[in-house]
Amino acid sequence: MLQAVLGFDNLLYISLEAKRAPEAKRAGIRRMGIIIAIALRIILLYVLVRVIDSFQDPLFGINIGSVINSEFNLHAVIVLLGGVFIIYTATKEVLHMMTLEEVHEADKKPRSVASIVFWIVAMNLVFSFDSILSAMALTEVFWVMAVAIVISGIMMVWLSDRVSDFLEKNRMYEVLGLFILFIVGIMLLSEGGHLAHLTLFGSPVEPMSKTTFYFVIGVLVIVDFVQSRYQKKLLLAGKRSNKLNLG
Image (cartoon, rainbow, N blue to C red; front, side):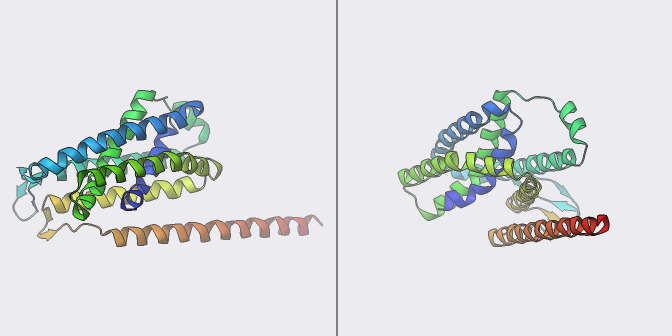
């Protein structure tokens, strides 16, 4: 259940990234990316179980008086880079949505299948750190964690097609999905900053709690639902007004 819940944001990224491929290849790309990522996730689990301390060893620090102080380790660097990339991806897609569709389609360069699969696998591994470390806090038995990862991978393969189909049929929810990804990026940045013991102007960077994250997601979903219902009512009211004026 933990793997499944923590994999929700990963599903959104996979669905949005796979859209860059030709429509006939999207389902296969999603499955291929997830299967490769699950195999690498088990390898990552095996490595983390044995060398978890090396991921926490300090690599370098940035100290500029009282402005910024930090002590980065490998774990913090990976999480921070993942957060930056997700925010960049979400921001770029939102900006594309704000341009004319014709211009967007003309300027949009096709991505190779290998490139899309690579980014799906890479971001899957970034998301994996959180879920694997959470699993390691629950049990030390390797095969139990490996089975949980495989089961969650099967669920992701099954759900990825459904999430993608839903977004394809309900294009208005793509904006909601992108802003959820944007918040995921902010959460990763705050977590990475906390892991790096980052302080800005004397104030430490605190990680966004999972409770806060899911609360914000819930508020976004409710706002989007209310907005869509209100917009439909306005459209109906406009149509009725036009009919009365014509009559």
